Every structure is written in structure tokens, then in C-alpha cells.
Image (tube, rainbow, N blue to C red):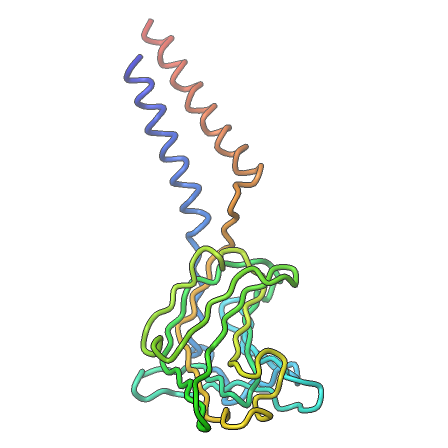
Amino acid sequence: MYKIKKTMLALSTLLVFFYLGQVNAHTRIMDFDDPPMPSAVFGSFGATHNQNGIEHTSIAFNNLSPLSHIHGALNAVWGSRVSQLEADAGGALFRNESGENFAFDRWDIVTLDTAITTGGVSNLHVVGFDDGLQVAERILTSADAGTTINFGPAFNNVDLVEYWFELPGRGEDPQLGEGLLNLLVEIDNVHFEHAVSPVPEPETYAMLLVGLGLVGFAARRRSKDHQ
């Protein structure tokens, strides 16, 4: 009897790890190299950079200017192509081509210049949305330059990620803010995962119950065979 219980426990554990592995098995990376990100991507023109099922484009900062854009550029020191957001580009975003939710896992900050020429510093805001509601935010400073940023559980189930410099912030033209034009962030190796639901869905419980039932049935048959 002890052996049967031990077998059931081992197989149940394997089923759980198999499910968790399936949830997190598919990583998609946007490295801006293949295909190469164009030298300018204009969000207000409907232009996007697409790679591995993810769409990357800029945020038009107001209705007066059509020049909201991000740049694909080779960073010679980093050794690969990066996505550049300058202050006069307003902001940029990521979303699934399919429209499905995703987990925004991490990215490399190659460069982050936040000094305002007239004095003071800016910050870079990274914000996750789900159905139009803000569900996560991470604020980055110049100290984050040259590091990998892990965004954590708050970004595990989003349908849109936007990022922009303050001041003046989302939806505004930074050219209207004195001394902001030199702000720059360069990112690379953006990792996306399948969305991780904080509460297992009914299908998850059903799958695990079926698996446990099959394990129990097999163990019961084995017990009868030995009687």
C-alpha cells in the first residue's frame, strides 16, 4: 500500500510540473535583429516592427504632430541592433499580434540617459495594461542603464505595455518641455512569455483531476493484480 501511495504522489507531482512547464515553455524574444528593425517606425502612420508574433511601435503623443517614432539602430558597443526611444518620440508600446494577453518578462537596458539639460532628471515609466486598465508600473532611472530589468509578477497578464519619459508624460509632446530633447533609452532582447493567470482556470483543475484519476485507477488495478 505504501508503494502505491508513493507512486501516486510521484506521478501527481510530475503532472503538476508538466502543466507548469507547458504554461511557461514558450518564450518569444524581440532582439530587433531578425528582421532588422527599420531606422524609423512611425506609430501615427500605422507602421510597426513585428517579430515572433509581437508588435512594437510608437505612441503618437498628440493629434497635432505625425512624427511619433522610434528607431532601430546598431549599437556598436553592445554589438547588436537596439530599439531607441528619444524624448521627442513621445513613447512606444508592445502588444501581441493576436491580441492575446502575455507576460512581459524582461529586457536589457543598453542606454538610459535621463538628464534634463536645463537641470534635474527625468524617469522612464513602463506600464502594463489589461483591457484598458493599468495593472502594473515600473519606473526606471539612469542607474538602470547597462542592466537587465525583470518586470515581475505584476506584468504576468497584460495585453499592452507602454513606456515613455516624464515630464510631461504619456500623450504629450516632450518638445514642449524645455531641456528634454536629449533623453534617450535603448532596449534589446525583450522577453515575452505566455500569460500566467494568478488563479488556475477551471480547465487546469479538470486536467489535473483527470490525471490523478488515471493514476489512481492504474494503482488500484495494480493492487488487485497482486491480491
